[in-house]
Image (cartoon, rainbow over all chains, first blue to last red; front, side):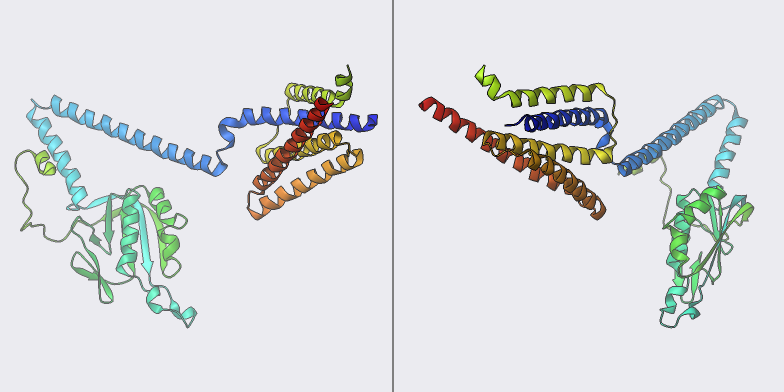
Length: 246
Length: 125
C-alpha cells in the first residue's frame, strides 16, 4: 500500500471530522429554534399579540368595573349622585337599544347592484344585492366594534330583522330598496379596515356588486322609530343571577 | 509493534478525525439552517465513502483514485438531489440520509465479518 493512498484516507478523515464537529456545534446552537419554521413562528407571535391585547382589554374592563363599584359605594349615601349615575346608565342603555339619536365618527357603506351587462352568460341574480350580503356587512361592522348601525335610515336594534322581501329588503318591517346605505358609528379606520380586509366582506362582495366605504367624521343615526312593547317577554323580578342558572 | 504498523492507517485516520473535530470545534463557523441539510447529507456521503475505503483497504482492493472520485461524485450528487428536492417541494434529504445510512451499515457489517474471518484464520494457524 503506497503512502499516497494512506495520506488520502487520513486527509479525508480530517476534513470529515472538521465538518462533523462544525455541524454538531451549529445544530446544538440552533436547537431551540431551528425546528420551528418561520411561518409557525409568525403565527405564534400573532397569537401571543392577540392574547396580550385581550388580556389588556380585560384588565381595563376590570379596572372600569372597580371604578364603577367605587362610585356606587361613594354615592350610596348621596341621593343626587345616585340619580345622576342611574341617568348615565340609562343613556348607555338607550344608545345600546337604539332608542335615542346618536352622533359620532364612523363609516358609510353604500351597496349598489352590480351591472351584469358586461358578459352574457352569467347569472344576473349574482349581481343583485341580497339580504345575506347586507347581513354580512352588518355582522362584520359589529365584529369590528360598531356601536350603532343604521340601514337606509332605519336604526338596527336588537329586534331588527333584515330579510328578503321580493325585490326589496325588509328592515324593522319597513321595505327599502337598493342602493343600501349603511351608517355605522365606531372607530372609522378600524371599521374600514375590517371590511376591506383581504378575503373579507368587501373583497368578496366587490366581485359582483359595488361596495363603497367612506370614513365620516360625524354621523347622525336616527332613533328606532318602531314601538317597543313586549307582549310575551317579562322581566323577572328578584335576583337576575338565578334565571341564568336555570 | 507489527499490529501498530499494520493498522497504522486506521490509527492515523482516527487521529486525523480527532484533529479535524477539534479544529472545527475551536473555529466559529456559522452554518445557516438551509445549508445545514446539505452539510448533514454531505457528511453522511463522505462517511459512506470512508467506510467503503476502509472496507476496500482491508480486502486490499483499495484504489486511491476511485476513493477520491467516489467522494466528489457523491457530494455533487447529494447536492443536486437535495436541491432538486427543495425545488420540487419534497424532503429528498431524507432519502439521501436513509440510503447512505443503509450503505454505511452494510459496509460496517462487511468490515466486521472480514476482520472476524481474518482473526479466526489467524487463530487456526
